[in-house]
Image 1 (tube, rainbow, N blue to C red):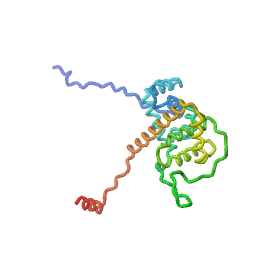
Image 2 (tube, one colour):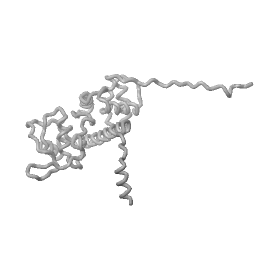
Image 3 (cartoon, rainbow, N blue to C red):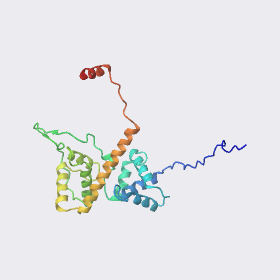
Image 4 (spheres, rainbow, N blue to C red):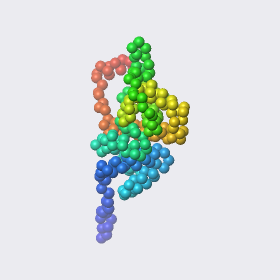
Length: 239
């Protein structure tokens, strides 16, 4: 009697063990990610190449990018200060990672002035010390400006708050606004550089939104059941 049909087939389960990332690997990945010019054509290939150039075994760009998003969501892997340091080394941008650039109330309402009037700008602050603007400072200011969504209300309040998180000397809103005008009008940075910074800011905004959405998906807010009163009000409105 042929029993081959009833004999269960042995499956060859050769699943690779989950990779345990060391602190140095995470730091090197942050450097490689920012150095690969994310969001542009061929960025994953560049990320893979830079990763291998660090002396690590080859990994697909999708896996590397996934680990970077995990790093963004957990300060236990890499602190914001360490991310800022790696980013500075890779891109020259002396600015904290996008997760730490998030400002509460992204569409801030108008502020009330002492005379009772309102303004879309932030409350006036003490003017910072006069310092010479370096190319590094100009680059960071342009990035923060584009990251803060300049077309939306309260942009300069967000710019000033994010600037205060850098390691540069504090600046008032008027100083930041004046310097940005000088950068744009006097050509303090090449137009190609300005385009690159703008694209980097756009990519960063998408990254932080994706990280935020991922956190919401993993930890959805509790749904509060409607009370009987609310249900009755809804029924009355329908009638």
